[in-house]
Amino acid sequence: MKSLFLKGSLKCLFLFFVVFIPASASDVFFKNPYIIWKDAEVLIWTPDSIPAVKATEFALSLKRNNSGIGEPTARLAGDWQRDSVAFLYSAWLKENIDEKVHAENLRARAPEMVKRLTESGDIMILFVTRKGDQLYSVLFEGESAEPKAAGSIPYTADSIAMGDALAEMFFGGHAERRLTAEERKKADSRPNAYYEEIAKFHGWVGVGAGFTQAKVPFTPDSWYNRKLRSRVKSYRNTQDSLSIWNFLDDKSPLFSVYAGGTWYGFIGAELFLRYSQHDAKLDESDTVYKELDHWTYNRYEIGLNIHLSTTYHTTSFLDIIPYTFLGFNYSFFSEDIGLKDGVKEASNAYNTRIKFESFYKGALFGVGSHFVFYDHYGVDLRAGIASRGRSLDREPSPDGVAEPTVIGGSTIDCFISLGLEYHWSLK
Image 1: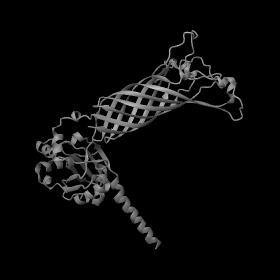
Image 2: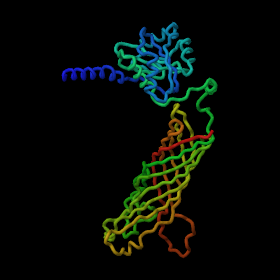
Image 3: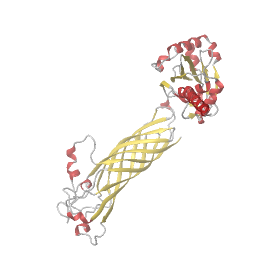
Image 4: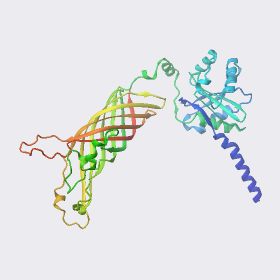
């Protein structure tokens, strides 16, 4: 009994390696962007006397592999096999396809064949042929005499496994609705994707995370050494008070939420709220800090950016929208400080520590790009420089000292951020 069980297990394992492993070990030679249509109509074209893939079974393979493809149909291209020009081209494809070819190498050049391929509309043409122990395949899509993709899989006599492997190799991913005859006629008359109707308004909302620091990349270290080496003594004294980074650590993670939009694909605006946390840069040699448990500042920023952008329709599912932005921001610093447990009374230095202005304002500029997938789901990458100065909501007193202390009179830092977004358009 045990021997029979062992033999059965080995047989199942052998069948697994023979059938499933080869069918999944596909080798794609090239794969250019193309549209997978819902309710796709696939034409199976082969010069072989016995097709390696059965049309009815292949339609089921498409549905198993891609749940969004709807109700696809597949049929053998009998009329193509009886056409002398198509037969000669299929024989040439079989002879010349290998792993080193590119799409342009397999392009049809005979006028009759070019016409047959380009007048196929949205029918997807799958050429398959067996060469030795490999099944080679080439995918054509209507309106082009150049193939969109090609590859090979190890051949087996199991046509279902062959169909599943081909469906996985060429027909995975998002499927789009097939155009009506009127929509296709309108699309044919449109000369270029860049001449498409531009949405009156394109909006987005997003959340982002990144990093901010005072030192701008590729600039001299000497510009920052003084403020980055600075340390705070007795809760208020530094070498210089012109920049807030003399008091606070300039490096911090940065988090943001934002919403914006563009009008007619060119000019737009964006509101944002950003948050970062910065530790006070203490001089650890100062014994007055023995009483201190923690001292940090939470920085909140609100602002408005003006965007100038353009849109590139790179593929059917991806739009790239590079932009540059210029805006202003208000920064608010919220202090978080506390003494150690057991300290009953704070020192005089603690009670007279440095105080920041109620807010700081400044400008920011930078560049970035939205990467929008399937019209709605976006990734945003941006980088920029922001300045913050002392709030000037009142004139300085004429009775003030000749050189009054200015806290944060000139604070500059750079940032980079990656965001996840949701997009929509109004025509």
